[in-house]
Length: 212
Ligand SMILES: CCCCCCCC(=O)SCCNC(=O)CCNC(=O)[C@H](O)C(C)(C)COP(=O)(O)OP(=O)(O)OC[C@H]1O[C@@H](n2cnc3c(N)ncnc32)[C@H](O)[C@@H]1OP(=O)(O)O
Image: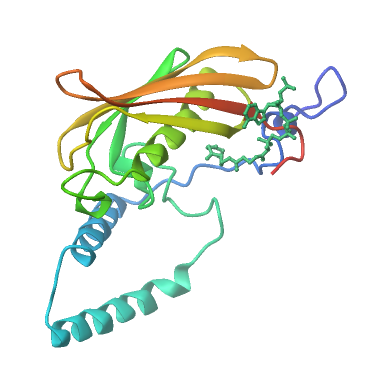
């Protein structure tokens, strides 16, 4: 429950802009495997060239699976997807399968890989996937720094080298400076030799009460 602060405002409300206060939804014991199975299917959907009858069977089975799951649809903030830090990508299929290994006020570090689903061209990761990784990281950097909820005002990415699929990689970011509602952040994506593959700068703007 939120508290009135000394200015007569509402702390939880002010901390969350116009966001509801979500309770993290804990995943059941098999949810990580559930996400893995769908990641495999995403990879296969973009890397197979099956005969028409096999495609027809796949459609029928996928539709049956959709019918099985459809009755359990829930609204935003009610699914374990995206909330479970012990599952790569926090259990969200939108996010690449990366795992948080440092989360504190001076920064956030994650380790993981990109898969066939994330292919751009000629063996390299799709250029749109890398800003996704950085943008999500900066959201966590803000949480870890203890600042109120913020949205990305801008996100600049420098692509320094080709980012490979499947190789284990590390991304690390932090708040560099703060000016009122504005937090200026930076991050680097590196391979295990320490080579910078991409780096990024972002402006994270604290939401005002009621801002979505
Ligand atoms: C759990 C969910 C949250 C996790 C977030 C994860 C990250 C995300 O992906 S968020 C999604 C992508 N981002 C968005 O959709 C944001 C869309 N934009 C907005 O909603 C608004 O622009 C918002 C709320 C960020 C700021 O709007 P508003 O409150 O009107 O701010 P505004 O007064 O224009 O700007 C505030 C300050 O930032 C500066 N600023 C704003 N945008 C920029 C920009 N692109 N470049 C440079 N400066 C900027 C302004 O100049 C101003 O500076 P100053 O205070 O010094 O005058």
